[in-house]
Every structure is written in structure tokens, then in C-alpha cells.
Length: 387
Ligand SMILES: Cc1cc2nc3c(=O)[nH]c(=O)nc-3n(C[C@H](O)[C@H](O)[C@H](O)COP(=O)(O)OP(=O)(O)OC[C@H]3O[C@@H](n4cnc5c(N)ncnc54)[C@H](O)[C@@H]3O)c2cc1C
Image 1: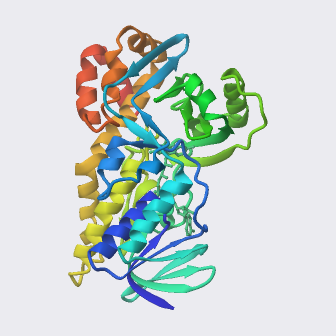
Image 2: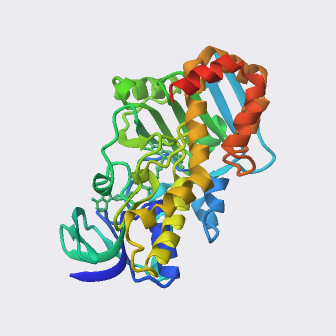
Image 3: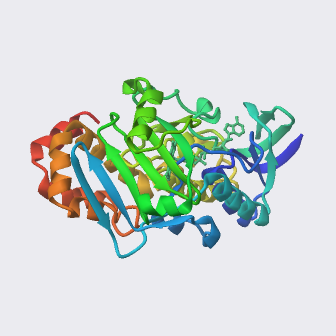
């Protein structure tokens, strides 16, 4: 049996960031992951400037495999490409990036248990008993950072319905860097119109393309076939291994705290519903949760759900309102594809200004306020009704 102040389940970006901040604030911190690191994570590896700005330390240069300045967007027959004069994002390989974050947390003093799967949580007296396949841990507070398919959320809220998450299917296509640069350089490629509430993508990494599709689960029929066709249409002809994972649709308000438990990152549902970006919100929510835990442990009753609910308010203020806007934009664009494909093709500023969101120069709320001038009010009202 090991005792700690905070037990963190999951060591992805949300868990490692929470561990870093908990340990830095002097809490006895233990974080545990079922995988041995480095481990594969289904992801495009798009690390926005916004995400980087939420970290307290710079990302090692060698982790950034490609600087991204813009996007090439296909929507039906229309295509538009916009390059900014400043970096919008970097592309990372998640196995390496996640190890880097874990290392930061360990250096800050957090203890890491890897290759241990959490199987059960039980609240008893002043602790939560965390059972793993190897040990028992007693934590005064638990941060659930075990992603969209983890178990901690079960102790806080009902499971998501199939219209509340997307399925992402991804593969890596090994290619020479020269061929990658010929295909696409400093840009990502995004194809709308191939799935409902999602898209297909080609991201150029170091020595491979990351290619994938995502779409809302209850409308996604035969994702393997969709990805296979997408890959062939992009001119790749090998046999590739596909990996699938759930992506929660952010912007739908869900319960995120219970007595002694706080959910962060994908476990809390913090993903941009339009772009599928989750790393930024995983990092930021991990940071907020650590602060809430630190304050809660100063106070006798701080572990109670009503005290921890300050976390909901902080998240809402700092980014959840924006996730709601991302959901609204997703509904607008996917409900009226013809209108938006034509708008994007005829007015480059629609994509140009959008890129300022990951570039951390504009919020979703500001973008939608600006976009409203270009979109008939009745379309917005119809999209709003379905949220
Ligand atoms: C196909 C796809 C493409 C994506 N592309 C992007 C992108 O380009 N950019 C972007 O910003 N976001 C992207 N996302 C979203 C992004 O991957 C997530 O939002 C992000 O990883 C969330 O971080 P997290 O730490 O909350 O969860 P995760 O990164 O999922 O980490 C959860 C950790 O918990 C561990 N775990 C789970 N269950 C247990 C258990 N029972 N016991 C112990 N450990 C457990 C897992 O092993 C894992 O390491 C993509 C997602 C998918 C599926």
C-alpha cells in the first residue's frame, strides 16, 4: 500500500501536466499509467501554439518534426490553401512528446508507476483506494487523466452516448523526407465532407505521413473502408496498420468532479469539436486541476464535490466556453456543407482567421463573432438549435 496526497490515473498530456504542477506545489504526487513508456498514442500529433503556450517550459526543438504555418483545405470540389507568416503549430510524435512531459513531471518530484493498470476506485474515510493490477494506492484526491476510454469517469458521470464522441482512425505511412516535402511542406492537409462531424487529414512528420479520419460515432459506418479509400485517393498504395480511438465532443457540459475525484483532458471531454484538438485542453485542465487539488488539501472539507466544483468554473472561464463555440462551428459547417465550402473557397480570410485560433491569437468566441457577419442568421439559429 502506498499513500500520497494526489493519485493521478493516466500519464498522457493531462496526467503528466497535472503531476508536474502537483509535485511543483509540494504535494506528494503519484501518477500511474497502464502502458510502459514510450507508448503509441492514436493522434495526428498536431501541437498548436496555443497548446505550447499552456506549458510552463519550452518544448525541446528536436521534438518538433515540422513547423506548420498553414493549412490546405479541401471541401468537396473546392480547395483553399492559406499560409500565415507565423507558426500555427508544430507536429510531434506522441510517443516522444508524452515521454518528454512525463520526464518533466518526474523531475518536479512526482513518482511514476508505469505498466500498472487501474482496475478499481473506492472511497473510504479520508482516502480513495486505487487498485491496480500490481498494487494498492491510497490517495487523498484522485485526478482522472485516463483518456476517453479510461475508467475514472465512471465514478463521476454516466458514459458518453454515441452522439457525444467521435471515432478517430489513424495510420502512419513511412516515406522519405524528400517525398514528404514534395507532397506538402509546413502545411497540413484537411478534407471535409468525407465523414459526418469530422474530416480526413494528412500530416507530414519526420519520415512518415500521419493519415487519418474521424467522424461522429453514431453516423460513422465502416471507418476502415473510408480510411482505405482516403489513403488510395491520396496516392498511397501499401498495406498499413489502422489504430482507432474515441475522441469526445467538447462543448457538451458534463459532470467533471465528484467527492475526492477530478476529471481532466479527454476523460473530462475537453476536445475541440471542430478540429479535434485535445492536447491544449488536456494540458490546461491538468494545470487547473493541480491548483484546485493544492487548495483543496489546505482545507478540511476541500475534498467534497461542492468545494472541488470551483474546477468547473475555472475550466468554463478559461476554455470551455470556447469548446462550446467549436461545437457550434462544427454543427454549422457540417450541417450546411455547400454554403461553407463555397464561403471558404471564395473568401480566404475564413480559413486565414480560423488558423489564428490554434496560433493562439484569437479565441473561438472572437472568431464566431467575426464569422457571424458572413453567415445568414437563420443558418446559425438552426445550427444552435441542435446543440
Ligand atoms: C485519431 C486521433 C487524432 C488526434 N489528433 C490530435 C491532434 O493532432 N492534436 C491534438 O491536439 N489532439 C489530437 N487528438 C486528441 C488527443 O489525442 C487527446 O485529446 C489527448 O491525447 C488527451 O490527452 P489525455 O492526457 O487526456 O489522454 P490520453 O493522451 O489518452 O492519455 C490517457 C492515458 O491514460 C492511460 N490509461 C487509460 N486507462 C488506464 C487505466 N485503467 N489505468 C492506468 N492508465 C490508464 C493510457 O495508457 C494513456 O496513456 C487526436 C485524437 C485521436 C483519437
